[in-house]
Image (cartoon, rainbow, N blue to C red; front, side, top):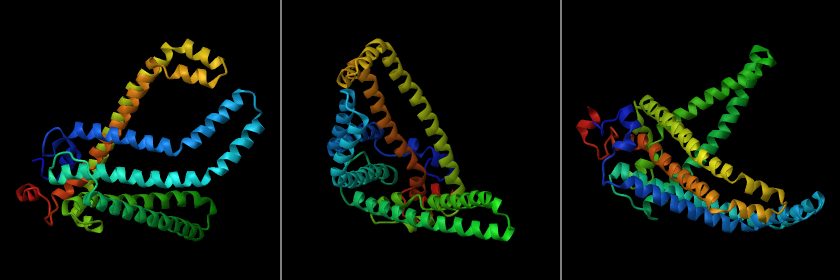
Length: 322
């Protein structure tokens, strides 16, 4: 049954989850719209930098020497450093908020079987805290892994009295650390789903939901990774072919614009509808595909939370313990 935890059900939970119909297309369209809005905010914040780059290119095209362009660019960029730092902080916060809003929408679908909704409330704020814990945990784990790799490699080289073996020792230590990290990440993967399920911040409590299920989750994620790679390959082939075809159909016009030496002429040629339309369509398709990948990837951990052997999920007990 679809609610019983297994590798197959975890792999395909994105397609088998219950709840009101019409979730996926609403989610994908809204995801793309908010992503475009976020990019618009990013463009507005970094517009001074874009203007600086454009002016540098225009100055070079008008005959300014490389040294003159570099001097103007460096001086103006130095003046913008404070603004660039602030813009990056704002975009980092908005990016985290974007993730939390759509992760909450996805997890409400999976663990509460609700319809699509986008809001900023308790669910989203709790997920922001979970994301912050993941970030802090990742930084701590990274620092610890560097210590383990350095100390382990040094001890091994000294024990074997073979400095040339240091490279192999480093690779071995890195592989060991990577495997441990994968084990920890998989065991804690249901943290977001359990936070939405229980309406309280849960992180290390997710460990119990994956007890005895590690390999089932691993195989589900491996299967999902293969599906996603195939999707990306097909999308790249379709979108890439359409874009290349549009450029090839206008190659003479583009070549003439490039030979003119005027960046504005080339920009005008690139912004023609028959070139712009395939590019924008591919861009929109990539945004929706990115949202679909986030939706699919959340499925296995959500099913683990939903069928938590300790209770708390909404799946029926006969399905969980069968």
